[in-house]
Every structure is written in structure tokens, then in C-alpha cells.
Amino acid sequence: MKPLKIAIQKSGRLNEKSVELLKNCGLSFENYKSSLISPVSNFPLEILFLRDDDIPEYVQDGIADLGIVGENVILETKVEVSYLQRLGFGKCTLKIALPNNSEVENLSQLQGKSIATSYPVILDKFLKENNIQADIRTISGSVEISPGLGLSDAIFDIVSTGGTLKSNGLKPFADVISSEAVLIGRKGEENNEHVLELIQRIQSVLRAKETKYVVLNVPQHCLDQILKLLPGVKSPSVIPLAESGWVAVHTVIPERDFWNKISELKAAGAQGIVVMPIEKIIL
Ligand code: ATP
Ligand code: ZN
Image (cartoon, rainbow, N blue to C red):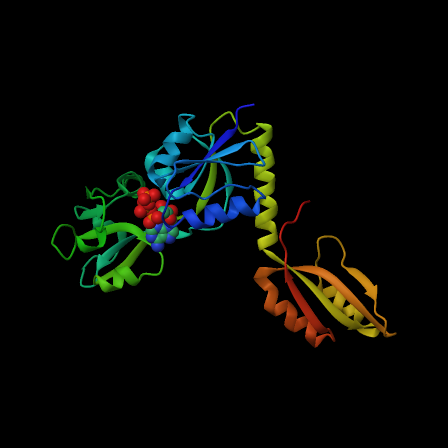
């Protein structure tokens, strides 16, 4: 049977995390930087290494069946593809930013201004939705220097920490979209058995990332209170210890309220708490 093809970024911000995710799904392949294509030895899949900008169209046109790319790139290229899974990395926000001394104070004051960007499609949509007519100046790189050079009154670009804006005398003004890496697929291929298998593997890796495996020693008389604090996949396991009057409780805890939960458990009498990463959670 013909292997599926998945397109990922060849080098850049999404490359390393995309490779890591596929390897965590148990896929075995060489991460050749020099070649365009790498076969997976233990799954009917080939990996195509491409520039991120080309990925949505390759998937739409069926040159690749799947792709991992930032949502910003998909929205900008206006392609018809299926969103299969958000991946939780490559997070960023696309913002309009102004020079520190700009007199613009609200969105409507962008009327008639010029805005430099590499994302004209996304910006145009936002401006139309807000009934603003502005002059979009499309440039391909270093958008942030254009106000300083007198080329535009504002910019629209990806901002993560804001450091680049600051060093160019700019301030964030309006958030337009937030973006993260997503798994996309060719329309009509969503139910392919290998696509479904891959999505399931990816979901089990993502679920595992969000949780920790925790073992705690608990005096028997504190057990009821400790169990009330624990959510778990089902109920936690409770195992007697060699020392009488004590049990070990095994459970999983969501990463997001991890430290709060640990403090509550300690306060309720838990001791010797051991925390372990989880590789996969298969439901
Ligand atoms: P390529 O050579 O593949 O065209 P690129 O230079 O266009 O790469 P990168 O800078 O590697 O792209 O960014 C890839 C994606 O990473 C972006 O499209 C965006 O989705 C995401 N991203 C996350 N944080 C940032 C950031 N701070 N700046 C730019 N992109 C970011
Ligand atoms: Zn690119």
C-alpha cells in the first residue's frame, strides 16, 4: 500500500517540536536535514521536509496527505484543508503595533493609515470586519523596521514576547488572532485508517504531556481526605505499605494545577511524594 505523506517544516521554529512529536508517537525515521523526504520504517508514512509557507497548498493539492503548520500560515494562504488536531506548540499572537509616539488610540483611528505586514490576507479580513479602510503595505520580512523608516504608520506581525517591538520603538496595540501549530489533512482523507491511527497516537502523547504520574505515602487515617482531593483517570489505586497504618496512593494529576494540588495533598498528610512524567495515555 502507498505510504501517507506528512509535510513538516524543514528548519525553523516548528521543526524541532514537529520531529519530537512524531518520534514520541513511536515513529522511527532519520531526521536528515539535507534530504526532502524521509521514510518511516515502522509505519506506512513518509516525512516531507518543506518551507512552512508551502505546506498548506501541498496538503490541499494532495502532494502531502497531512501537514504540521502554524494556523497563521493556513489562514494567510486561504486553502481548503481539514483541521485535524491542535498541537499546543508554536504559540504566538498576530498583533497590530504602533510607534510609541503614535496618536492612534482606538481602532477606528487606523482609518486612512498605512500598515506594513507579511500577512495581508489576515489583516485585510480584520480591517473589513471592523469597517476600517487602511493602506496595507505587504513586505516580506523585517516588518518592524518600517515605521522607523517612514514606510508605514503601523505594523501587523507575529508577536511572542514583545522584545522585538520594544527594541524598534513600537508598542502592541490590538490582538488580531492567536495561533499555534496544527495538524492539517487533505479534505476527504479524514477517515483513512492510518490518518486516524496517527491522530490517536498524537492525542495520547498530548494528553500525557498535560499530566504527571504521582505516588504518595499516606497514613490510613488521612486517606479519605486525600482521595477527595484527587481526580485521577478513574479512581486512584491504593496499595498497602509494609509499615502498617500506611498506604501508597498512585494517581495522575493535571499539569496546570500541579503545584496547588501538591500543597493541598501535603497539608492533608501526604508524604514522600514521587512525581513521574507520563509517556502516553491511551483511553
Ligand atoms: P520557513 O523557512 O519554513 O519559511 P519562517 O521563517 O517562515 O520559516 P519561522 O520563523 O520558523 O518561519 O516560524 C514558523 C512558525 O512558528 C510561524 O509561522 C508561527 O506559526 C510560529 N511562531 C511561534 N512563535 C513565533 C515567533 N515569535 N515569531 C515567528 N513565528 C512564530
Ligand atoms: Zn515561512
